[in-house]
Length: 348
Image (spheres, rainbow, N blue to C red):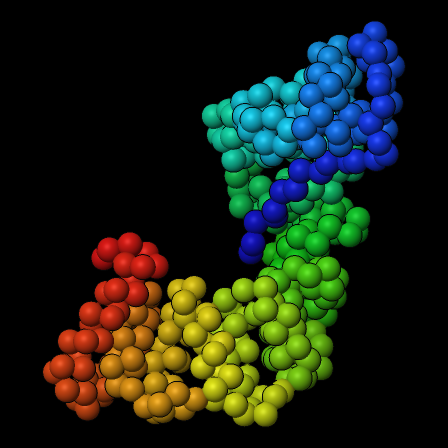
């Protein structure tokens, strides 16, 4: 399951206008956001007014100032300063600030990492209906981070956020239905929530929905539809989808067989460390499918795939190929594999 990503929301409205320090306490959210919009652009006067409002206890100003320090927008990035302003705003009950303060503790930004404190602030924001906090609290229950692992509780929070349209929560709720964690396994429900997330552009959901179509789980089997969703995720750089799309091109499923395209997508996935793609790419070089036959490149990718954890699957192929290759080709392949590994993972 992918972790729920955290977003720090910045609300920007209107244009900045002068507000005296004495009027800070009565400042509206629109006025605070207008000041922030100008402060982010480097307007020193607007920044000072925003700081004055925050110091005067305006909760929205405290939150927005925290966002600026967190992002390094209009001020030097300072996580400790961001955390303090989020805390001041959170203590006044601002849900966005509570959610962001939870993120700071979860990630250890500006404060010592503490999942216990993160869960505390996520819960406060979640109970106010903040979708990001609901998704993050659900993730903590799913993983057992500072709270007892409880899939049913995780589902409850994922559902609350998913019903608000939060893409990561929709994906995670789909995952829970897909694997029967916290709810009875239900592929149709899994596909439903994956689709809602996928339509918002989440690559992991696009890939999983593609898998559902590929296998005919929860939806009628449809290779062309699987290819469509694999491609959307693959074009975002999602390695599993790149591998899956390569398989579809190699096996003539949902698209005309095209070894060149298969090699292209296997290569993109392989370069991200996907062991299965590395193994398949080795076979393509071995057989000369989509690329000129090249035992050196084939052995290189077998060696890399083995190092990536696919040792059982590639062992037989490596043994057969080593009998066909010359000692010089084997030595070159080993050198190329070491160079690839050093470039992608450091020396080994």
